[in-house]
Length: 147
Image (cartoon, rainbow, N blue to C red):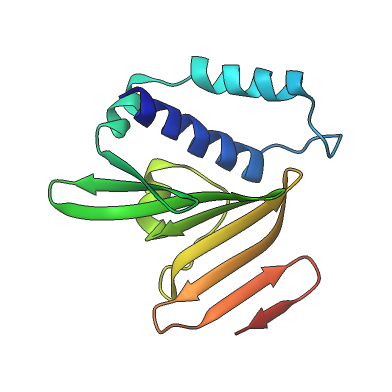
């Protein structure tokens, strides 16, 4: 249960930093990180803790995986990986994910079933959108391309 609670804290912290926090400095101090972690830990409510009961956690290589299920159905899955100074969060079935974690990002689930967010210094540097038919669309700060 503690591992699942830590998982929710990591996901919440990553999403909070990714979508909601604009830091004046591009390099957060240890005190800033500690304050944000304490805020998240102290503000988890019973609904968030109940949500943890429906998660399965596992590790595949360098990736941490979370699967959210309901009865015998997989609702969505997430993976988190830290590559040098870049954090990567990948979400499969993002519509169901956005039901549990509110965000300002609009997921186009009619085309894309997988989203990957890459972050460096609290700033999203690239978003990869994988479609149902195998195409990948990449958004970055300078231009957008389709692979």
